[in-house]
Length: 204
Image (tube, helix red, strand yellow):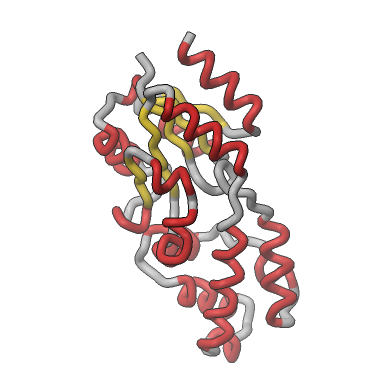
């Protein structure tokens, strides 16, 4: 029997356009957009894992593109981090409302997200599914990231459920694959309408 809905944050609950982030970062500092075209590298994984700051992440990215002076500019790095995090803070209210409505029906609500601590410091208390969740599992607090199995197990334990009692949505296929390997009912997020159908299929 299904007991919980578990949602990723980025591109599921959040309204995020990574192209817009790239453009905003480039425009703010006068660097070519291609410098920021691939933010989801090992550096981002370290940021999400909570082992480096956003400033360190951007310093590494700038150095890789030959911008040594900019990589040492503390004010510039802080600006880049602020722009990055602010873009991730915008939520899809329809998705948020749906998740909270599911919870009101008696299901547990879980959050399972690769998330840097600096984002949580700024925005955690402003995002309704975060504050309402029965358990919110964030990578930076565990030093684990999806698709590592241990982070899924932590989320299940926090919700007090078995893998086959959870329905999980994420926008990244490797994260879905790992969840399914653990026995979780997992679906690739393509939008709210399809997610509602997938959710109902698990209840039927």
